[in-house]
Image (cartoon, rainbow, N blue to C red; front, side):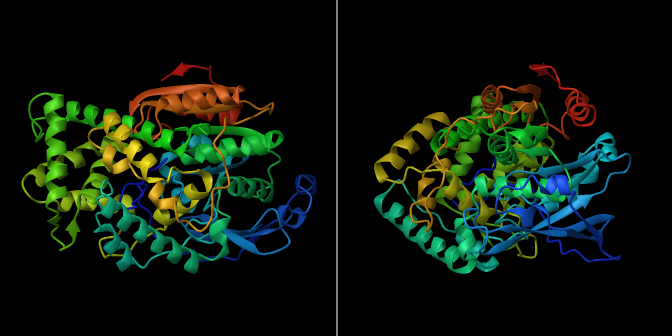
Length: 503
């Protein structure tokens, strides 16, 4: 689950524009009649559609899948989902659909950029790996709101929302932003909620010719996966949900959980940094964290200029600070950026913020993840939007996280004037399927705290929890052989890992 701070940035993997270029004659896959027969009434043509796969890059296959804009009225407008396939290298058992998180992360980019390196040879030998851009994301009827130049300008805005004047200015800006999104995106903006995306997932299951869904979801992708399990319990095959989101908690509880987890993460980072000779943070962990807070406050009071001439506000500075906490392999980059910032050069911190925002050095943005993140969350969660409620939340967040709390506050501003109201109320997931599900959690995960994985495992009941004792966000593909073996043996051999397995 990514984090949106005051500047509307989304911390996600940096993505690159990808336009499939066919290099060979397309092949068409047809759906087995017995699988097509699983279609809910009125959706038969979507479940039985043939997908034309074209070679697009590095041996991958790209295609398009049609789904209804509105599942309540499937005979009206349709939208197109972009999909990509890494073909099995061995004895294919079926397909695994993957979602990298967000909301707003591109599954097409994920499979293209990380599929060969993050996924094991055992998994790739036994399955086609299929990535997709969920509705509203990337190349699938994307949410569109601003030009690249307007995004740069928006990032330079700082609203003092703890004042009446600043809050009013923030609300006015976000209303204008919402109007832009509505005008440029159109009707799809009201239909990119997670329940609709989960229904798309069942269409995708059918068109890749699988009677049951095999699925690997990271972060927000676990929320999409657990939603699917509640809607289609009989169609669940082998689901792995890594870095789980607890579907029962409110947006405010989610924000508070992340604030506490990122505060723990910055302290863990500081302790590690101070063991290195190159660390610019002195004294105890408390002293080191305070030095970071003082640096944030200095940038907040006097925004600085990066070497490329752009203004670096405290919003961007904090986004740059948070991004490396997603992966402890990035901590050395954070140390270098902080060392430069203490010397008066915030350019490296701005580059980290740019990576989180998917901004390229040439000034273009390679994804719409920030827009999709806000649009999907405004549909998925009711928000506290009254002034008194948001002010009280800020006080609690400052207690939970003295370093980041104020930057996590006032999330309701983003959705108060959104053109579409929320379509979902948080509640525990209900799953009564016979297929067991695997949940994976990480002890030091700053974005999806371990307690969320523990809670989701209890809600699913028919599930097994694997815990990695490590730092950073999610585990599979970046942890150890204990996790990868447990996941691979489950997917390939149907061996459910021991519930409570510690890695």
